[in-house]
Length: 347
Image 1 (cartoon, rainbow, N blue to C red):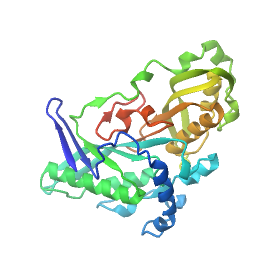
Image 2 (cartoon, rainbow, N blue to C red):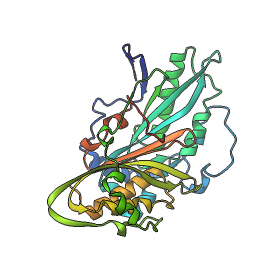
Image 3 (cartoon, rainbow, N blue to C red):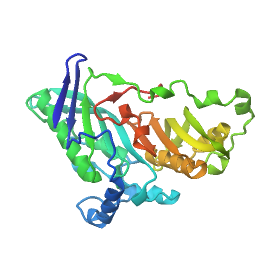
């Protein structure tokens, strides 16, 4: 645990948990860790945690707001449940990456009852066995609201950060990096190279107007390309992505970022059709990004590939999954627990 004070910008960020000085780079032994972690899966299920059943979650149910800190509110979901449907092997993932969550409604009290409000950023790796269910996290964070955590603002902030990092790391069986930001924090723009690379501008208007968009469930057969002897580079972002929560059916809106090199000459209009086909799909944010990544990976046979999404906020939380064939393609601002990323227009 250490505290970073930046006098020039008035930034005050608090980081918690075990620190890895090479956090920005991915462990080259990730594959070995994956296999070892999966072989311990039976042991994990015997822990005193809830076995997975999506109907046990608080999603789609009326619940009371908790008054006191309560770890039992947390619920985890195995990533493998969706991955097996798309041929993604947990032991040999075709990507590296992180899930980045920004939580805007974290508040707690000092010992004398003074409220402290912070924005929390949490980051954990895509090779973890589990992801945290979003409503359970919201309820868990709400359980801090009326409890006291320290004599001073600083001590309360530090204690809450340690508690959350510890609880989530135990729940997900991976290191979860947590930072609390106050109003003085500096933001940095993620994916700056995508600012003028809108997919809609790369496909002529007359072509777009000539497309009959009739597929609203994921349809990979829409993707079209032709093999060439030349390496083609594709860099684009788009706000076409909409999917739905697979429990509540509430819409999720995302800005998608794609960076790919391949010998396939891709019809970008077909990519537009494909992304629109998610409009009636019911999946979690992380699952959507991995589905798109796997389809591109299988169909376009890329040399390099990065797919990320920055989703709009719902329930005081936005979720931003990022997957890549090589760690160097991952956006440093988004994945760093030290930096608060600037928002997209819709966030």
